Length: 139
Image 1 (cartoon, helix red, strand yellow):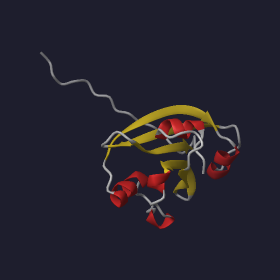
Image 2: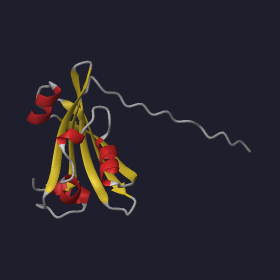
Image 3: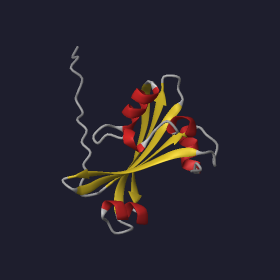
């Protein structure tokens, strides 16, 4: 498929360049929890097959293993979004319902973007918890 403006910016490719897209729905207790769209530059994505996907194993780990790439960092954006008709259909929602959107861009050891993952979470089946701890160094 052709890279959209958002995907091309994240992957460092030109808008309209060929990219490989994988679409998945994560289930928990037989209910949809996450609708995932993940994009790869063509030179990476052309090496992936549906048979490579293993439930419970992040796609980026499959890419690391299969292509012998080392992923050293990811940049994550978390924001509210509205379910479009595709997202609503996959998550069993009504179009227009608020969802949590996470975009993650994974980078290899040489700094190149390898994957952009766009996740949309069902609003009643996801929670985000962060534990913050005070420093223990007391002078």
